[in-house]
Every structure is written in C-alpha cells, then in structure tokens.
Length: 389
Image 1 (spheres, rainbow, N blue to C red):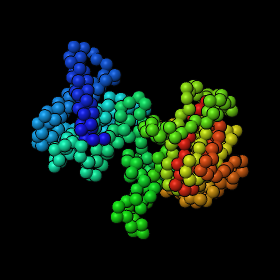
Image 2 (cartoon, helix red, strand yellow):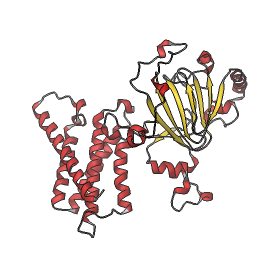
Image 3 (cartoon, rainbow, N blue to C red):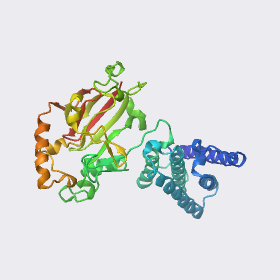
Image 4 (cartoon, rainbow, N blue to C red):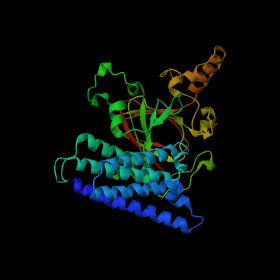
C-alpha cells in the first residue's frame, strides 16, 4: 500500500480518536456519574485528554511539520503506552477492563501515524508513493503488531499472543513473555534465521529456553488464516456428557473453539483434562500423546488451588520425570526419606492403564471430555485443537 493511502487511513483513525475523546470529555462534564467501564473514561479524564491532545498535534503536523513538536508528542504517546501496559499486570487478561486495552490500541495507532509522518517528511522524494526503509517498516509493523498481540486491538473478537517460556507450565521458572512472531521463529524455533547467527556459538539466553505458543486464538487474530481451517463434521454432533462428574459439563457452545499450538521439540502440556470434547489435529511435525480414563481421576493426584489459581484440572504427576525422560526440576528434588515415597508413587502410577500414540502431520485425535492427557512435542510442531460440546 502506498504511503499516501496509509496516511489517509491514519488521518481518518486519528480524527475518530480525537472526536471520541472530546465527546467523552464533554459528556463527563454534564453527567455527574458516568459509567467509565463502558468507555475510555475508565482510564480517567486526564489520560483521555492527553490522548485527545496528541491526536490534535498529529492533525497539525499534517499541515505544518515540526520535528520538536513531533518528538514531544512521541514522548507523550510512549507515556500513554507505558501507563496502559502497566495495568495489564494488575489483572488476569479476562478481567482486564477493556478501556485499558483501548487506550493502548489508540495510542499505538497515533504512534503509527507519527512514525509514518516522520518517514514521509524526511524522504527525499516529494511524492508519498515511496517505498519505506526496512527499519522504518519494521517499526511500523511492530507498533501495530503489539496493539493486536498485547491489547487485542481492544475489540470484542480480537486475539492476543503470549508465549509460554519453559518446558511446562507447572515447572519452576515457567513464565509468559510478549514477543513478535518473528522473534519466536528466530530465537526459539530456528535460530539460523537470525542475521549473523553462528549455530555452534549461539549462547543467547533465548536459545537455552523453550518457548511455546500454546492454546492461542491465532485464527481470530489473523482471520485470513481461518480460511485454511476446515471444522470437522464431528464438531457439530452432540457428544455424551462428562462420564463421571456432571458438574464439569459446560453450557453448550454456539460453535467450536479453535486454538493453535506452535513450538519447538520438547514442548510439554502436562497431564490434565479439558472441560470440552477435543479434536487435536496435527498439521506439521509430530507429538506424543498419552491418555488416562476419568475413571482413574483419583490416581491422577490433581493439584487443586495453588497461589489463588485453580489447578484442579492438572495432575501433580510429571509423566516425563516418572518415565525417566526428563530430569526433575529443582523444586522436585527429594530428601532420602521422600525418595522412598517417590519410588512407590512411580510404581503405583505405572500400574494405571493408559493409551498412547504418536500424532503425525495429517492425524487427528479425539480426546473425550474428562480424559486426562499428556502431550509432548517430538519435533517442531504446529497443531490445531477444536473444543466443542
């Protein structure tokens, strides 16, 4: 798309942001008890006013470029991004008020507009159909990527991306990190994609960690990819309820829930069960899957609530460690007295019947509701899961 067209879109978006902010501020003056949770006013009038001023500055810069004013506006936009971003750590994402996501998104749009103005104003060509410098283009794309990835573009049907850092989400040191898709590929999937990479001397911290794009609504975030996915007919049937606990049955969903799973070898989803019937479709690579019947739930040793987070669907048993495939994490080291109990646990667990398989590209596995399952990546792997009931 030519810069002229991009600038036209930016002008429209900037105008819309300014008009919305001004309308909210005017309403706040006449309405003594506004409902902030329904609008940007939840961020407070001061931040809404600051956002509106940056939109006004951008409109002025369109007519009369001023590098000093542009630099100051960029600082204010970075302030808005930093303030809204800090709120993301105060809530679980599902509980994060939408106005903080919208503030981040709107500030990102204005930042994109300002970056594009700088690029066109400093270009030697007098026409706005020039090709953007690769560095500038990367910064522009990153700005909008973060608005989509982190804030979900503040839309009802938008996705967000966090990658899991660590072998398994129950391991010590496991965490989440916001990165671009390019960083995921370069730093965790195929380091040879990095410019200047020397494979045998790669000592970067990222290369020593495992990252997993797990249970991510990729097809909501990138709708164009959704056209590549066909929902299996089985997802439109009426499967049986939970076999042992009817309280685990969920309200009927209108359509199957799709999620993507992408990562390098040795990514692990620990032994757990899901609240829906699941079709796990392997697209690229292969995975090992082991399943235990819900009839053996008591022997799965569910974790329960940990640090205020309900983990009752996840087992405290580490299949990889019990089978000798993995070394125990630091928090799984046992005293001599405990080692006897651990050995007894290992023997008892081996007596629990299970079924297992290796999923290769093109394979689909049906995992009924309530069934405990452990999933282990054997290669670079991309999978799609379909939850339905």
